[in-house]
Length: 273
Ligand code: KIV
Image (tube, protein in one colour):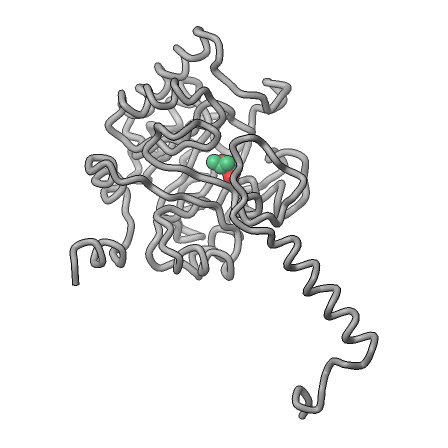
């Protein structure tokens, strides 16, 4: 077996992601929220599976990620863990479970790790959540940072437009990225920022930087599975590449099933006992 084939079968760990960055190998990350999808995503060879709080949008139909609770994230994460054997599974800490104080943040992260069996958590923000990041990492829980467009702060931003276009915000993002690395985060996500800035940050940091809407200069990419598979057709930002039209395929199948039931074509004798 060649080294590459062996590598493709090896369990992905935070250490392995760091090695990938050092070797210049791009990291593929995608969201999943349930057992069946997570199993397909893992079997396809994804490096990282994010149980994102985007579950609030694509699974529950909410307008923002804010309503997601810790219990709901743990439910999604434990379902995902049942379907994954190779990818590293990272779970979003939902809004309100880590911003208040660092003890509460640690208690939330511990619940996620214990009850879902996931391997890392992701947190939105920089210097504002420094103590929470420190305390969670000091308990041995790997933390992925998330800067740029941080959807849990949508009510502060007032828009999902590109972040850090102005010099002051770009400088704060760079300072926050360096801080998160110094605190011990194993990776960070940069969402919806100019490609040049994302490339600069990726070159500055020794930890992997995963982009979404942040151009091609990062160490990896992440998308929301419902968006890239074309299940969720109402969301079409410029950065999204659609790899399938599952909504179209599902619609044809559903209509065919309804027609077959109505015409008594289904079930046939061969499909009966
Ligand atoms: O919740 C999520 O899906 C995310 C990704 C968009 C990075 O945070």
